[in-house]
Image (cartoon, rainbow, N blue to C red; front, side, top):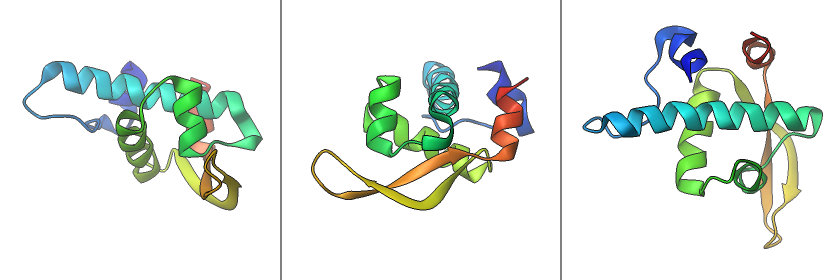
Length: 103
């Protein structure tokens, strides 16, 4: 969690009135980064990311979006099918994300 707060001195996505929401949001961002690091070159769709982290989509997606805005992850042009057969984007760590995870 400290890593995310130190990096660019950012505010994780959270409910502004809730200190516990801010702490949870920072932890969620770390969970997403760790899951993407474990899946390395294969990457993760949002559905796979939720399964890998144990997070719901309502927790996973805001963390993933913030990480993408910070250029720690990126959406590839590749896709995979979800369980329902829909096409989903695959996300990977950027070089900056890899460097951050190696600290």
